[in-house]
View 1: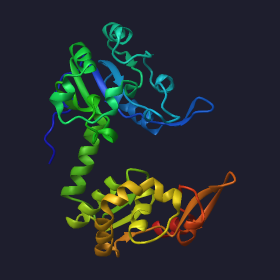
View 2: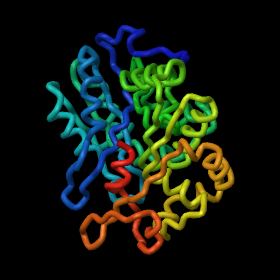
View 3: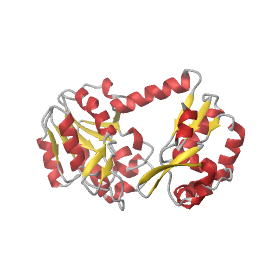
Length: 310
């Protein structure tokens, strides 16, 4: 289904590789530590597969203006703990410090560059490859590498320089696995096919749900997170000012489409019965009809929803 060249199709032994990954993590800003790092843990097997190469890691953490927009020094420390190989870090992306470190990097070593979003153009969207390819970072770093591996699947929808700007991209281990999963789901899904939806990026997940329902790939969608809030608001449920504020832009753009889709597939779209909020430092389960009385963004699903989903 997907036509692409992967890291398995080329000989990477002894080569210098730039690997764009997604290790965006949950940061405890007050204590300067990583709370949870599932994406970093998921990266380790990929780095093990590339142990006969010199690997430079490019990644982002959060975005400018947010409290957890920090350098990748903590991420490099975490990788160092988990990987039985030398792991270096430079607080630079493509300046002299970074380019010298890249040139000096030896086979078997890993170098983590600083948060790529500290470079202002990385926060913008570009029309196509050629536009991004002419930017300073791309032109500076491109000659230093033999291959460029695209393995930031969670950020692959963004037309940003570090995602689309490199001369020749090959799919990395994580991306290959995701392609394989998607191919199986789209071409020969096991039945019943159930989609569990949570987290942010509500409108994107709604579109994926709608596509799979309309193409008869999906039997049920268990909705939580902001996607559930988006659907609830579209069908007239007041989820409270804080929740509504988190999805208001998406709601303004697609309210009619969301409402129409829900009406069409409402027997298959399972919405939460209760959600968790934090009140005075304690977790509290709130039924949907009472959300309007609380000015708090909801988090996890509540016990009633957990029971129904399982």
